[in-house]
Image 1 (cartoon, one colour):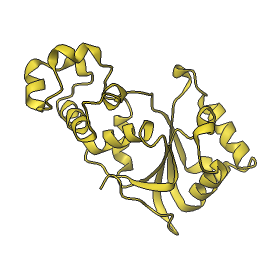
Image 2 (cartoon, helix red, strand yellow):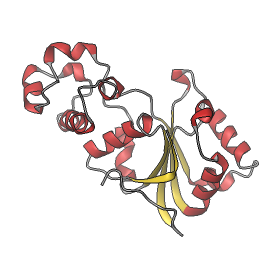
Image 3 (cartoon, one colour):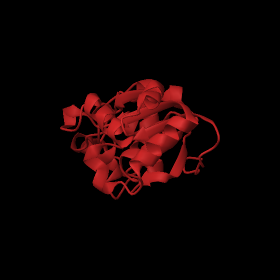
Length: 196
């Protein structure tokens, strides 16, 4: 189930960290150092997703320096387990922020697009829109939406069954979970390390 909460276990295979970066620190309600220490002690591998310099945010090196500072410059163990991926931002937000499209409808649209190799919602034909069957999705309005399948799709499958944390709960974390659900992947939320 998409919203199943996970607890830190003695040993778990993999963790995905979403948008735990300096630009969002004021929104983060947990101790970042505690998250990073727990992650390095508990998981074999860690996927760090973040919004990078193309969007005016920190580079990978700057993010690593931020993590190293949080870990009192003892980050070697964390970095040995970590893969960093600049995930981009807002790939589904135009529909997520629209009052007519609920979670289920967005997953249905994303799933249809992935199955047919369609990367941008504006590429949907009238027949595609009819086949999707989401009543508020209108072909004549597709040009109004920035809605695309992100490059993140290319690596996410390798992380099926991972724990996931970070945030924001109804923003970037939700985008990653929508993509995963559309790909028939499941993640387990670690509630203690999710921010609003």
